[in-house]
Length: 216
Length: 220
Image (tube, rainbow over the protein chains, first blue to last red):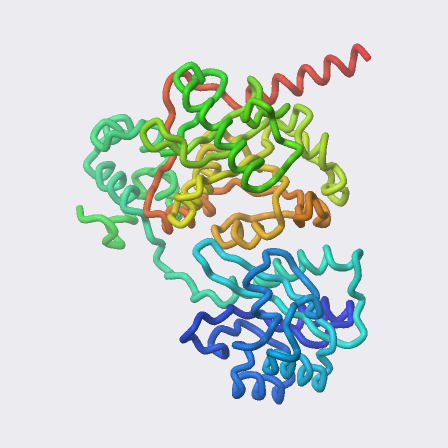
């Protein structure tokens, strides 16, 4: 996060938030992945449930491309809540901003939103900020992933192929048994070997038995 | 399954290829409004559809539900001919081990399911099997996080630019076991591609084009 602060800081940004967008019923504060926001503003934002009326959030769900906060439309007369979010934000040096929507594969919606006062935000800097935001998002999500299981997991197919290898079957025979090509069987064996850190087929079988991945 | 269709086995798939050209017209021209691709016969075919193109098409029976294509970068490619400005930081690749990936599509009523993941798995599985090391692509930038979510390692070749009002970028994508593995765990399928009939070696084909380029350069 410090690295992001420095990188975006060069463009004049003072606030950063990397967050999922809450569906109805979801709590905004639990969707936040990382942030550099004034604590006071975060408190105000969550306590007043500003996420429901924030025109930037609403626009972000509809767009696939990045935009400046000021481009998010709302009716200041009829949408008082929206007007209030935009006005209150300026009290926290969030006068202008740039937001990059993230649309995941299975309906997950997220965003990287950057704010400040004196910004280097123009046609030349936007494409770079666009990429920086997307790579930041990927990096933060990666860092927040639970640490992987220390014992490597084999796929169902890999376990099957190793089990047959432990019965002395050749790759060609395994292919015939499982109705896959010899090449595919070899590939599964190679994958299993590399996951288990084995140097050859015998070693793979030995490790698989030792770790109770297959039953001898 | 995702079928691999090349010059070597296209006699087994002529009907499927025809349908796919029509679907591409429906999707890229009628739906997404890429007017430059519009064709009077309603078949979207461009200069990168030829004997060197390899199609990866998702079939349900004989019905095409999605797909994409690969094209050797040792020939003039979409990136080098049409969008070189998007790759002006790291340059356009031209390498037998790098193939250009394009025309990714899914028919409307299959967009919710896991076909997306299977199509992404297919390109990794096919390239691993063929020894292709990287794929290059001109893609809409909003797809970047989607590829990253699927475990693709994507390197930009330049800054995004506007193409027909859409932010678009040039990128190189690594082909790797880890990526394929990550997608397979999500789809629950160890293999998604199917091959019928004679094979064509993609890298051998790309090498031939490189050789030809060298000879042409010598003569010139």
